[in-house]
Image (cartoon, rainbow, N blue to C red):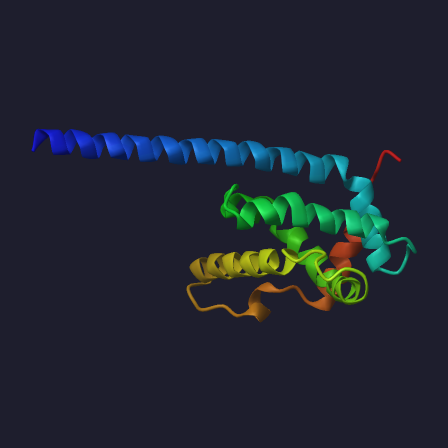
Length: 170
């Protein structure tokens, strides 16, 4: 009986160590992704937003932002290499914003240029929306719908305008 208790304690310690290692590695990666997106990608975000608002004619920066959400963010989260709660905490606003604002662009690009492009963005977006619903349900104490958590077109435009005014070093 004593050996069984020691074995169970050992297994628990191993599982805890594995989880802590996973959490540490996930946090380390998300910190790097956060720094890159919020500090080094300001120009790309600015011009992507301007393109979506019709104020800039080149879509290259939007492609760059969408590529960034595709890989590493979506790829790593959907394969569970990073914790979805961390991606949700740091990136939910921008994933929702850029996915919704660029949805027609994404569909058109996939239809006319490359059907495989940005194939993980929709599952990423869907998961972020589900997590947001869960958060709202806890806070509000009631069942939430997409309408409760998805910003209106006016809000999307306001958020894009904020992105379009980002100060860059360029």
